[in-house]
Amino acid sequence: MNWDDESDDRIVAAAADGEDTAVEAALRPKDLGEFVGQEKVRQQLDLVLKAARQRGATADHVLLSGAPGLGKTTLSMIIAAEMGAPIRITSGPTIQHAGDLAAILSSLQEGEVLFLDEIHRMSRPAEEMLYMAMEDFRVDVIVGKGPGATAIPLELPPFTLVGATTRAGLLPPPLRDRFGFTGHMEFYAPEELERVIHRSARLLDVEIDTAGAAEIAGRSRGTPRIANRLLRRVRDYAQVRADGVITREVAGTALQVYEVDARGLDRLDRAVLEALLKLFGGGPVGLSTLAVAVGEERETVEEVAEPFLVREGLLARTPRGRVATPAAWAHLGLVPPAPHGSGSSGQQGLFGA
Image (cartoon, rainbow, N blue to C red; front, top):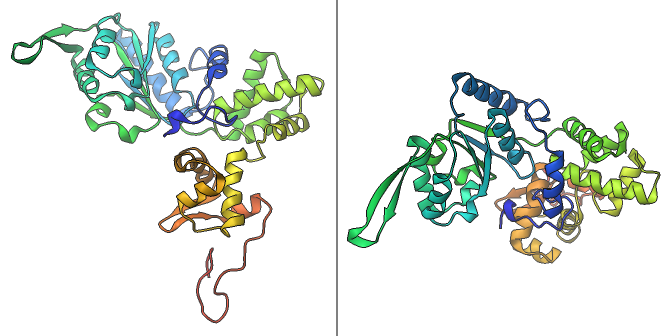
């Protein structure tokens, strides 16, 4: 299990569900000027695209890495729009054979943008074919089998490949080296998410004040997709149980209903922390034991709940097991136990001497 497969029944899941896909199409910015956040990537990409347009050439291949929901698909569409080119969208898991990739590449138009999502999950034979396609705009199509097989070279029109990955470390170096530009997408600051929320609220015709946007932004885990999802749920609450205007109080009450707390933790996150603190005294405790305590699979705890808890400084992974930090005790309003060995033995406690 990985971030690409993150359970979509969590309101704070970064992976897109069906509703997200439909709504995001209307909310996506159309050019780099509208795109909020990712300042370094945006400025660098702007230079790459402007230089390519001035030369009258296709843009260099682009690799975008980062967690789900940060805007990789949106940037790929902006690249195509800025270059005045059509875009074709596919994903790594759908390309299981070199022939699948050859069929896509051979039908590209000159200058077209090919967006390959989850590129790290592409099959190895297709990956090796992609090397030559990216570098020489050519692929060798194998006709026949055994000793009589023949390689027929197929020339491709110049195109721009935009690859997206949540796990850049899984890409082989020969593939990474063929991208002319690599951009790493960072999590958003709360003030950037506030801008995203205000923009989305205008497009959705939702009335929201500054404090309401700040409340939603603070619970959005640094991810625009989550911010937009929370905005829609708070909009529903404001429409049914308030006067339709999203204020701080309305946003806070609505997100309590959806079990998203002030730091963006949901039921699963809090269950992991509560088990670690209340059942195991803050740890250290093994991952399998912790997973059993919360009634979840080991992989679910490790790859769905833990990344955010670690990033928030609420949980630490140590060689001896998972350990809660002082911030975790404070967040749940609990008092850490007295350090072990505080008497004459001189042994250190959980958080120090």
